[in-house]
Picture 1: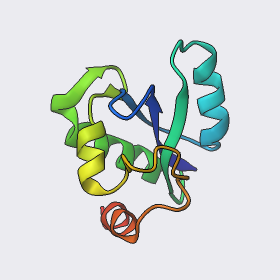
Picture 2: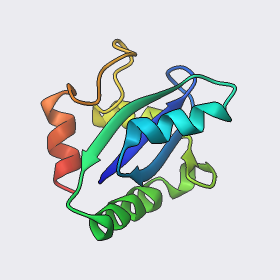
Picture 3: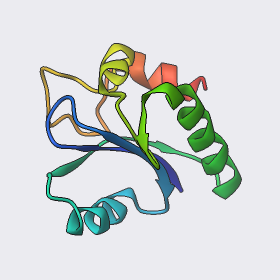
Length: 108
């Protein structure tokens, strides 16, 4: 199980924060209904459903002021500051993020 961050469009696009067993499949399912290209920008492996819900809830509350609708947030700028979204590397794999971003998210 994972908590994921999926971005719509380019560097300042909306970000969906959710959880799924397979974030790549979830993104593919979302892509069907999206006119913008989606990309998985980060995923956090969690131990199970309860932890996934807790971490998702944490991020939804953290970015509550940036909520656009549902689970979509205007939080790309904040994710850049946290080191999760790299403006100079738009195709950064969620598996190869800066250590500072990993430390920050794993400490939550």
